[in-house]
View 1 (cartoon, rainbow, N blue to C red):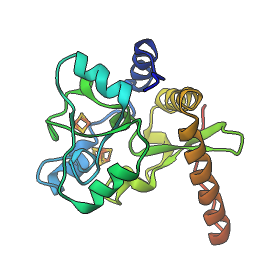
View 2 (view 1 turned 120 degrees about the vertical axis):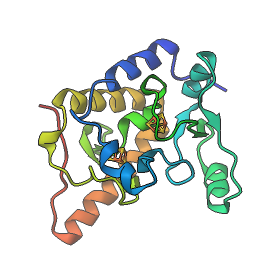
View 3 (view 1 turned 30 degrees about the vertical axis):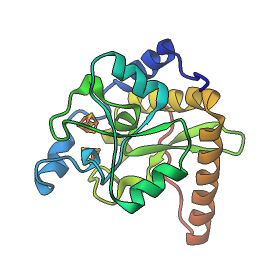
View 4 (view 1 turned 180 degrees about the vertical axis):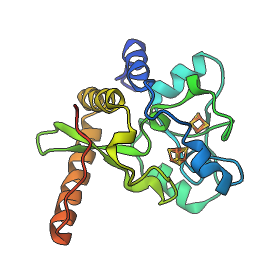
Length: 194
Ligand code: SF4
Ligand code: SF4
């Protein structure tokens, strides 16, 4: 399979996203209500997806992420139907994070990019995949580090150069979001640079 993200690029992505998103441990907001496990870290509830190169890179630096094996029909179906460059994974230490081992998926949650039709990342929006259990969703922009927002936008834009399929996916999602907002007479809250 073609290599798209080189190790150099992966290290750059990790540097960009290692900037603190907020200045407190948000796990303390959700974990007490979820048996001590942050809701976004719970395996099989929110299944972490790693890019194949990312998964292999972590593998070279000591075993951490494991491929998920699940008996749940919904998860099996999701794996079968998804892009071949995704590796659905399992975190061995949910609730006891080793920050250096976090995936790109861990570091971008609870956001996703909002993109125009040309594929330009306009900013970040709360992901619809938050399952409603992330207490950060809906919080105002002022709690977030502006450098994190800017770096995350840069990350998504560079990722799209490597994975045009991801760009298409988010163009489609962003279009749906805009149409939904228009129908409901609402404005989309986009966290832009600056
Ligand atoms: S991002 Fe949301 S779900 Fe994840 S640890 Fe922080 S508050 Fe909890
Ligand atoms: S690496 Fe950390 S943030 Fe990611 S799922 Fe595991 S415990 Fe959660």
